[in-house]
Length: 88
Image (tube, rainbow, N blue to C red; front, side):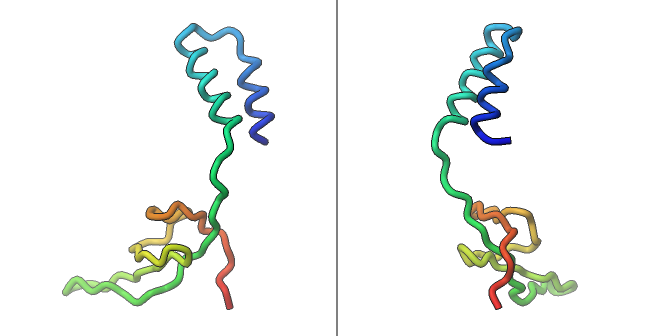
């Protein structure tokens, strides 16, 4: 669904109480605003963390190069979406 389609769908909701209608109006305005482009990156394996007993793999964001202990769909530091193919 595009932003325009979402705004149109939200605008067609007419049966909400006043408080909820205000929230929907704010959501419509937010959808109309320009948003920052999505950054795309990937997790690079970056050694391991040893806590004296166990060893845990570490990963580095290819965009902001900050280390993270798990692979997630988004980098918790820079917000990059982790869907880019690794550079070879």
